[in-house]
Image 1 (cartoon, rainbow, N blue to C red):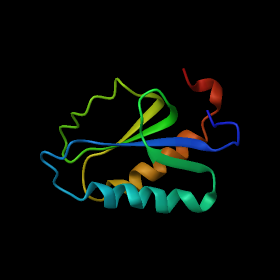
Image 2 (image 1 turned 180 degrees about the vertical axis):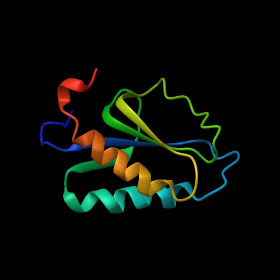
Image 3 (image 1 turned 90 degrees about the horizontal axis):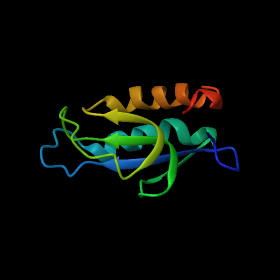
Image 4 (image 1 turned 45 degrees about the vertical axis):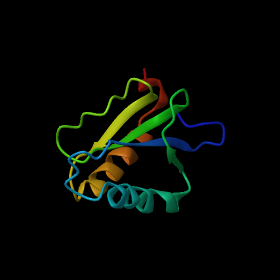
Length: 104
């Protein structure tokens, strides 16, 4: 659910990078570049205790092992490979169009 200024809050969580097979920061940058021009989304590095509409998880491999339990979020969108940023941006757009009452 958007915050008081109507923007979707997105926390970015990176894995530890032990088996990274692609440049995770480059893929999250593709997401922010695709979505930021609309002015509808706020991105920040995820911090425990802060509620996010979406937790964008950039894992270095398909194992996708980082723990998300410390975070408060409505939905998680995960990037597991190079090129995944475009699909993640589209998924976030769709989530943002979902009526708020569908969020638990």
